[in-house]
Picture 1 (cartoon, rainbow, N blue to C red):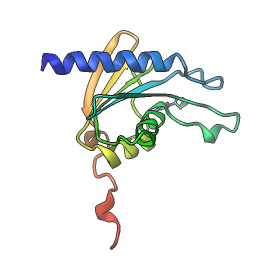
Picture 2 (cartoon, protein in one colour; picture 1 turned 30 degrees about the vertical axis):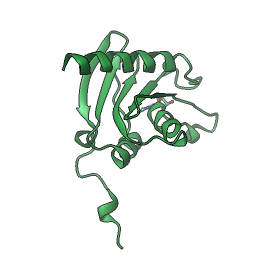
Picture 3 (cartoon, helix red, strand yellow; picture 1 turned 90 degrees about the horizontal axis):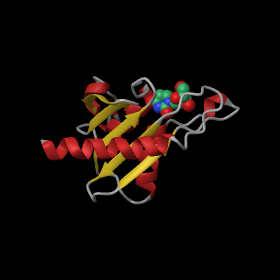
Picture 4 (cartoon, protein in one colour; picture 1 turned 135 degrees about the vertical axis):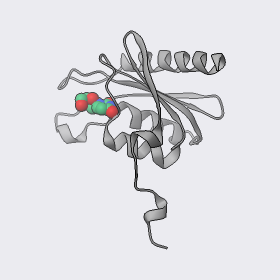
Length: 134
Ligand code: THU
C-alpha cells in the first residue's frame, strides 16, 4: 500500500511537469496527465487548445494516445492535475474505461492528491463493446 502511495505521488509529479506544457491560451485552465503502463513506463499529456475551440484535446486523452501510439495500452494508473482538482470530462472517462475500467484515477491539485477513484466508478453504466452487435 505504501508502495502504491509512492507510485501515485510519482505519477502526479510526472503529470505536474506535463501540465507546464499545456497550451491553453483560451481557457487558461492548465491540465497535466500521466499514465503508468504495466511495462513500468509513464506517458504524459497536457491539454492542447485551438482557436477553433471544439478541436481542443484534453490532457488525459493525449497521455493515453501517447501510450497507445508507443504500443502500450495496459494501464495501471492515471494521474490528472489541475489548479483546483478538476475532475476528468465525460469524453476522457469514456476513453479511460475503453482500456482500463479498473484503473485508479488520481485527481490532484497544486497541493497534492485530492481523491482516487476507479475509472469505472467515474462512468456508471458506461457504453462498452458488449453493447455492440455481432
Ligand atoms: N480539460 C482537460 O484537459 N481535461 C479534462 O478532463 C477537462 C478539461 C481541458 C480542456 C480545455 O483545454 C480546458 O481544460 C478547459 O475546459
